[in-house]
Image 1 (cartoon, one colour):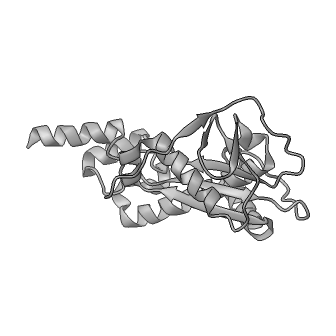
Image 2 (image 1 turned 180 degrees about the vertical axis):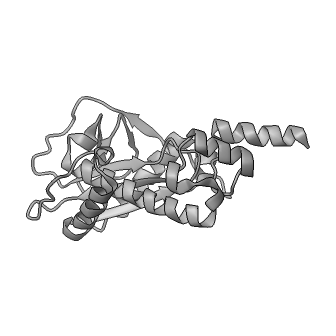
Image 3 (image 1 turned 30 degrees about the vertical axis):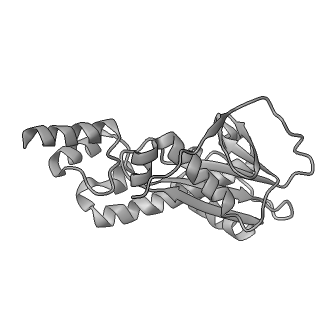
Length: 213
């Protein structure tokens, strides 16, 4: 695939902006750690006139509650956007750069342009919108919580499609993370087209296969 430019990121700094009067979008990602599948990012501008109750870090919610909240966010938010970077882009750029690119795509995919993007974590994508990183922002800022929920539910849906296409790997159970079950299935069935070849366990298996030929 064509070479993609490196997507720079900016370390988190003390708060630079007075958020009063800003049109804020929250941004978060899902899927940095798994051995397979895309990394997802979401951006959300909430509607202050239609608040969504119960928003928090998606990891602290049940799958059922995440799905319920995702529907409410999509219905009531002023704007929302979900983007991703493919396995090939992750392998080419590295996971940090691919995550920054997915976040930038999510921000740029909003139908309304925010004046400030609050990013979960300690780094920000470089984009046309001003950004600020907030460590553990997915449990501190409602906009980031909403983005966390959309990114997580979108990735979970993608993993179910991957499971349907590659049932031998049990993606429905481990969601691509390097669990004992996943590593066992990798050894039994080899590397699939949706595995990230730059990740250690996958790369090691490919190198072993090359040496065995």
